Length: 80
Length: 80
Image (cartoon, rainbow over all chains, first blue to last red; front, side, top):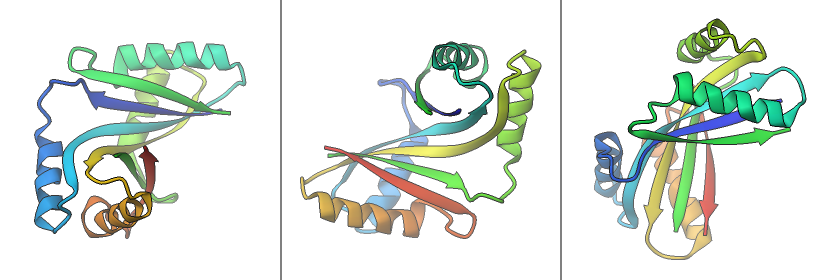
């Protein structure tokens, strides 16, 4: 089973890297670009086919290692 | 319009960061974890509502700034 985990800064937490990307895009002439936020995406290959177990494991992985839940939030996406 | 851009290393390009995450997860007892790859996710707020134009702009942004297309690939997701 393949899983994709997104780890992004919580709303309200300053994101200087995202801001820098936004400014750079504006500078390149992309005027339509407004707010930009940057985060991490982690693609994980999981053995087994029990979706509920996988989801539970992924949640535990995020809480324990992948995300700093003080300032970051995570989303989990399973793709069969 | 909100867009989400994924920038990940091309298949075949070594990903030491992903490997480190994989090892750490295995070490924490998540034995089902196989290959792990890490990438970037960039959330972009775009003015205007022309989806085709937005898609074209985002492609140009990826080619010019967001991705190093020698070693990275990108995916674009538009969400209304």
